[in-house]
Amino acid sequence: MKGYAMLKIGESGWIEKETPKCGPLDAICKPLAVAICTSDIHTLWEGAIGDRHNMILGHECSAEVVEVGECVKDFKPGDRVLVPAITPDWNSLEAQAGYSMHSGGMLAGWKFSNFKDGVFSEYFHVNDADGNLAHMPEGMDPADACILSDMVPTGFHAVELAGVEFGDTVLVIGIGPVGLMSVAGAALHGASRIIAVGTRPVCVEAAKGYGATDFISYKDGPIWEQVMELTGGKGVDRVCVDGGGCETFEDAVKALKPGGKIGNVNYLGSGDYVNIPRVEWGVGMGHKDIRGGLMPGGRLRMEKLSSLVTSGRLDLHPEVTHLYHGWDHLEEALFTMRDKPADLIKPVVVVD
Ligand code: NAD
Ligand code: ZN
Image (tube, rainbow, N blue to C red; front, top):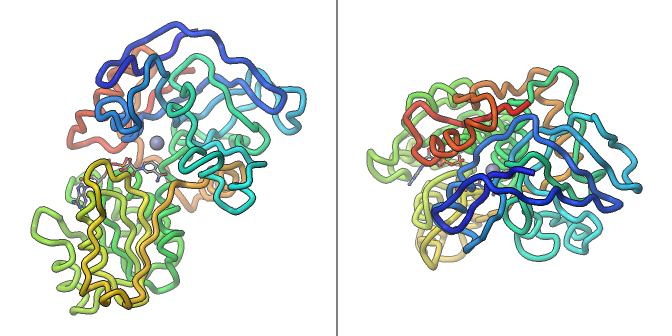
């Protein structure tokens, strides 16, 4: 089969590989549509997970099942499915402890294009098919369905980690495709005010649609100072961190009220330490929680999140700004994600 692979750090291309084998609990699927993720860019060009040779990239797609193992109960060839980016081993001790995303080791629930071949391929392998796949709702657009792989569950996980409650004022730092889903998730959780950090017009427009009420730019001075100005010096109840770097926590802590929570899903790609300002963290006693996590994955989450789309409460169209047709355009889509033109949120390639 053909797959689009990382050949080594900074180099990619189409390669031939053997079609993966299906174990008793597994499924083999073929993509209907694939989306490019910022993580693919970090992996390929920044060596975020170390060097990989001939590893097929990609972890966001919707798909059709072509084969299932003899122990798989709920899926059969021909089923159209949602595929989460994180595919834990559900019988692991970590999953039993409630941390499926760390099944087999820290962050090891992320398998596609990390420990095994990803989804930019004619066929790909899914472990624990009954636990990880979800049926794609009737009538759902396969391109939209890709956004459910990672952008929705990750953006929403920041909201869960930050513990957004009714009436909260929420700061969302970074409104790329993940941050936009934090805006949408915070609105669904009952936030009264959502302050979004970002300026690209396409993202600002989308964020408004998802419920952002105020906008600031990190280019106009420290985020926390602008937040204090907007909130009459009070700060915010919750912060979702979906962009920035190790220094962003300084702003997040400073902008937060005592008793507030920070939920980070942002990948911290460089630097040795995360900066937490001592005084604004209440000299260690401010009850300002800092939480960070990989999204949990799993079928139940996929089913619940997709029901928000079918019920009309979550519109995924604004996330997909660049739509391509056919594998021939995959590389173009990948390079577009790397180069981030001003009008880009998410590139999706429909392959079938
Ligand atoms: P993105 O690069 O499209 O969006 C990040 C946004 O943050 C951009 O709009 C950028 O302008 C903005 N930004 C940059 N510096 C900033 C600063 N100092 N302050 C405020 N905003 C700043 O990325 P994305 O696809 O939306 O993903 C966001 C992050 O989430 C990435 O780091 C990605 O690797 C990570 N991610 C995590 C998970 C997970 O499970 N935890 C899953 C997918 C992606
Ligand atoms: Zn992703």
